[in-house]
Image: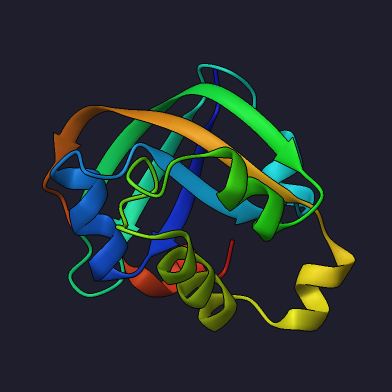
Length: 126
């Protein structure tokens, strides 16, 4: 089992923490390709360094974000509508990068909440 630190915006972090978001959505870059079932995604809140460790319970790969969003419920992604999810993803990832890489959904379950703080600079250097 491996651990992968991920910087998360506070809005998304809080949805994971309160259980309203059960799927982490990412582009399938080299780091995401390494993640396996039962690995731990360390979600680091960009705003305050709070950490939640989430176990990967499932992985699904899609051609693009549109296919991913159409296949999964917006509620599992922490939103009310497909359109809202796509707007958020388009703000986070450039269209060029989206064309270059596939999309991946990590089905996650928080394993426990860890209230420690981490040096953000150290995480960004990884």
